[in-house]
Length: 85
Image 1 (spheres, helix red, strand yellow):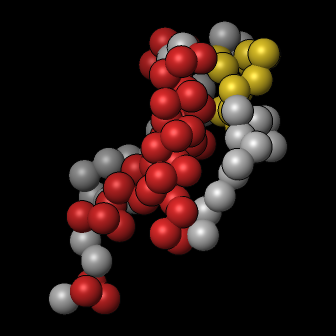
Image 2: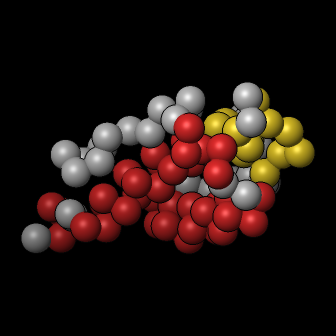
């Protein structure tokens, strides 16, 4: 993670605020941003379940925080690409 962002903990209270539609949009972003790195979870979807009020994402029943942390890493690679300098 970049110095600007600390990883989000799975038990972060803000994770309870994400809706199915929001997580679906984040998964679409993951597919778009991750494809250039070979990151493809075509079957990744939201799950009809929660753990302690937090929505799960089905690529191994990961919490939303895992999805957000992965997206942050992908966004950071777009901001700083030393191999293109």
